[in-house]
Length: 600
Picture 1 (cartoon, rainbow, N blue to C red):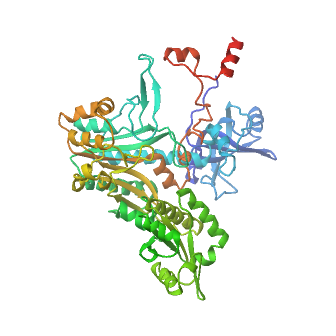
Picture 2: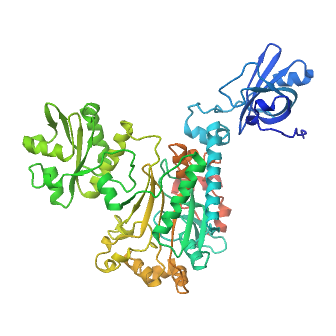
Picture 3: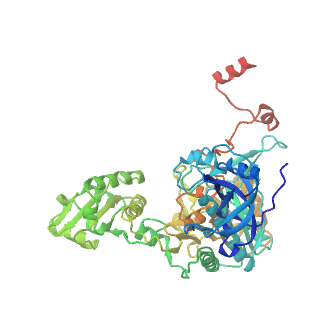
């Protein structure tokens, strides 16, 4: 085994003041080149790169070894730090170099399948397959260090504020919480299953029953759902709960945390308290319950003007209980051609919209897709309602409110991106409050909890649980950053009778409640304090603070879009013996079974 040269310095740490000292550095060869009687080697570790020089004055075998170095060889180098003759201002260590007199090669390397540099433009699936190489890149090293800093700051802040970190189980009872569970079969009890937790929700409530008072955990959670840029089957939450508090107490604590995080991690001062919008106001103004406040393009309701008009799209929407709303795009008349508007129209169909009506305002008048249904004064009235001026574009959607909000909310974000309207240097935090307690379940036609079934109703709406539960508001709150929800929470139900009533509203029978949630209801019998909490998506929070576009860039070994781990090729198959131990068998089609029988 090769004797180690014990490192004295990190590659990226050497500076001009280190000149004249002896250093031992270790890392990967980034580049090696021979120039005359010199060999120049750029050596890299997680802190950066330093130039190493080998000359012919060192022992011949060491110089010849230096000539054999190739990219990604793992080496240790010892030598004198000296000032560089030709300085490199683009490198943190660019004022110095190491004149090497000793070299050890710890590992040779084949030519890697991806370049170890940020601008390689390689396909993401290849990056994920060779993630251990991808992680060597400066960008990924930066991202992982930044994530570490966020976790460190988080723990420090909450520990200083009296929180206790407690781990909760990874193998739990399957419970209906929204997304599909990942199930783990039990070998000891064939036919029974654990679930991997979608969140520690019930356990942290039990910790409040246990008198922990303030709990925090940075915890892995699992949800078997379709993936996208900000969603993974396994993700990390900053999970917390507090006793004897109300919603204002939780929000104040979080504002202090986010202010501390932004200052310590990014050097940015943010203003607190954050603005608050009710759910209804957010939807009516921005078409979203997580609005980006860095730009305008607010929605305008023109239903009153469109009521009883000859344009069937508008009239039918209002007659059926919907609305007619739109946004005004300043300067959009010239920026968006008919072809561009048609493209936007197609994009909103995904949200259920039948299409888009449009108006272009100019000094010559108004051109519009629906002007034949209104006279000139009525068209002028529409333009005035939107505050539209010459050169502006108005886009209008009609239909059920949910559809109109979804379509215009998307349109607002899409136009802001295309027109570069958002201030990229701004950090816009806000709270969205007063969410509906329930929403319609499209599969069953009944009600389901908008957040989860442990969220307390607003006391002002408690009587609505019997007569009109769909009108009840929740004591729930989401914190939003630049149009992305980074955390959400609520005041919890701590009364067993109210919790049972909530389950009944959700259509759960007494037997189902006892089977799935009986242990929580039982705990409520023995005195539970009022409590409330919140959970952040750590991966998403780090993504936003780094300016990345996917949470995969904040994880060491993420899954791809098919929920596979390209490094280890997970998920994989289990042997027949393993399945038998678990009391499981795979149902195969006849062709597969015949092939197996032939092999046997």
